[in-house]
Amino acid sequence: MKSIGHKALISQCLDLLPSKVYGCPLLNYGNDKLSAEALMKIFIAANLDNWRSYQHMEWMLEANRSLKKSLDLETISGSQISRRINDLPTEWAQDLFLKVVSMLQELTQKEKGITKKIGQLSIVDSTHLKLPSGLCKWAYVSKEWHVVKMHTRVRVVSEDSCYPDKILPSTGNVSDFESSDELIEDLGTTYLMDRGYPSKQNLKTWLDKNLLFVARITQSLKVQTIGEYSVDHPSILSDSKVLFGSSDKPVRLIVFKDDKDRLYRLMTSRWDLTSQEIMDLYRYRWKIETFFKWVKQHLSLVKPWSTKPQGVWNQMFLSLTAYCLALILQLKTKTNKTLWEFLLLMRANMYDSWDKFSKQLFRKKSKTSKGRQKVPIEKKKDPQFQGSVAKVKVQKRK
Image (cartoon, rainbow, N blue to C red; front, top):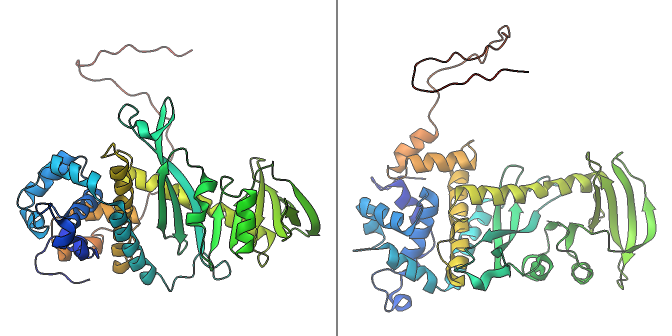
């Protein structure tokens, strides 16, 4: 990546977005002061640089005139941003997200996934985002539970890297299996999912479409065993060919216990993998849980910036667009830093040039260490209280 003069890192990041169509005057009729393109870039910048509120956005834009100028803004206020995000068509935010995902797909097309034998892997799950009950009655699930869901499909491109390639926002009362038609659709990838997705009808649909999947099923799903296979691991209790419900298509069922003696029943259409490979494959479900934890901790996703449905949906798409944009930059630089370390360094250099950021990114350590040397372990002593500021009452040990 080349530096463009002394342009700030944040501006160069936003320039990568394929968003020019949303700066078109025809699409922004009546909103000359804040175009849809500028609005979406503001929200993505807020995620990348950890801006906490509409007021914070206003202050950051006022403090960085070059960024403000690059967004073609003369004046801006937090209330103006707040109003516009609620009016922005969610289809536009979704379209920008999918365009950035396409950039990621092109960048990672040579990646083989976890292993060449397993191939492409997509993990499907959902996460809740809690909303203020007094202001979001439209998100009612129970008296103390006003939430929305983000049904997510994460594409695993390597052992260390994954990204969301599709999401479905919904109210909190939309079950996981009701979202499956939107997320489980493509041939050529193996879908990994938990118990919320494989209803009898969904399983039948996936088999009819010849989709590849590994899904944990509930104890209530009854099966008829029509064949048994030998197992290749002491934790695996059985590996069978079964039928379920009214389906006449056989499917594979693997039952195993983990180290805490919990029972797992995995139904799969992958006949080419060993039972141990299927069991090990299911353990990769933790990747989507780690992804949800990451975006909630490090991006502006948990705290809602709107109390209206459209504003909440837009926040989801734009936050994940920021995630994908950071991942694109990390992959392009070929750094060995984790995505979180990379984002932290970006935030530290956000208003400096790309050259300065790059030097920090690949800076060699000035000192070498021989590591911690082994020393005799001394018996720990009680701390000595000094000074007269604090009041201390020594507790006698029994």
